[in-house]
Image 1: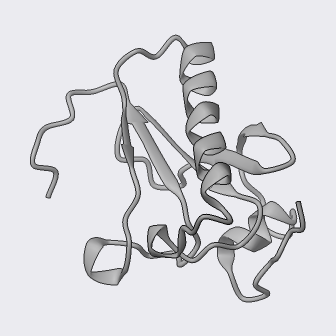
Image 2 (image 1 turned 45 degrees about the horizontal axis):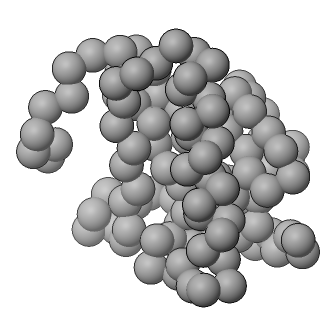
Length: 117
């Protein structure tokens, strides 16, 4: 897989090791790390190593990567002994996306009410 990094993207810089993070998991396609402002006792992000701006940029060409990310989320939560968790991906600023790089928040360890916001 060819990796595309956007030079001004915060998460691309984390993937490249230019900005430190507390790693949860890494493979050749994705990277998982703890959120710096956790909204739950367990709160980590899983991001593709290649730059995709948001869910709005998922295409037939990159959909397998998104499926892989969800498999990784299952692997991580099982290894952590987590059975109840929420996966969130915000798409666009009005939806709460603050970093324009596709990412999935995984939250657990407390009651997560609905609707969320």
